[in-house]
Image (cartoon, rainbow, N blue to C red):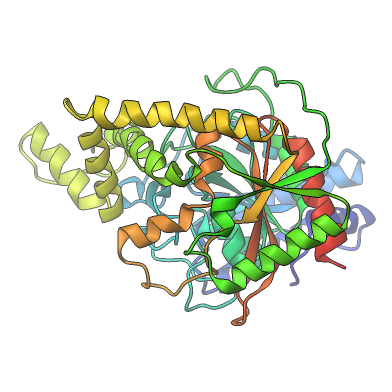
Length: 468
């Protein structure tokens, strides 16, 4: 089966060329036969039931844009009655009693959930290699990683194992794997999409968004899942007024001058910027104070929230427990050391250290001040330009096991982290391939709350420039 778009399949379902049960059955078959390890759990029985309901909606003319469309869901997003592990062995037997708000909205729109996509454990990683259920492989080269932490979602979409998937993005976890797998990954403005039902990594940075084959599909899914949710205390009730169009596109000087940027990626990005300029947009070089410190800010704030959020996984409330431990302290210690992976433990320890007495003021408070200053720097930048463009990642997909050093792995996020720290919408678009045939991603960042404007521009770049 080819990589169909949501719009294409909707037309075929509506015309009767295919029916929903045949469609879902084919996608489940492909997922079962795939050796990419893109899914942790498939939901064949329920998916076929939903497909049958979708057929009735199509016949009665009550179908929505998503009716009968096969979708994957990152395994950190709660699905009622369907195992949700967050890629961790500590939640191997956890079955949520409720749907996340985004899942509820997708179901109401008629989408059919094929299964739960593989991911880095508790979304901590940039390669899907920290998953407790084995790594996902890149569809373009099975010796390479698909990116992370939403690597299973991106690989499934790229390989035609689902039409679209929901991922979550804390420091680039939608956009980076989208870049590595040659698909579109959209991180909305913080607060535009409810986080209720997302197993939190870092609550002030996490955001759910779609991974799709094109921007048009991302628009449809975003429209479906966006909106205020009283169950999420960080959900936005209103948006600031949109800025006046300037016909200007900014580039961050430090990003294009980075020594970490691979020549093939730099060349492709510069060519894309030249095409945008040729189409009538003025290109403005930006100096954004503190952007080079984004990674340092992120790796102070994020671990503190990780240590807090993961305290609940103690072997008592839910999930698995270490056996034959006599005291409560022994149970906590054994459960967490036995069932949490090395990267998760590393970030919990780092977060506990940073937030401890004597270091909280030295590190965490300073990072929060720097975060606020960086947000203001971006706000000032968007007074001058409509969008900011550049590379999504420093390189294309790397080999499995190549970046075992944590610092090398963290550096994959240097271009994606700033949008999370500032709460801005950002999208990654495929713009070609390197000499080895691996996809290259192009990132577009928009002003706070201007998601629709960003998606419109991204579609323009995709339609007019990418497919010349």
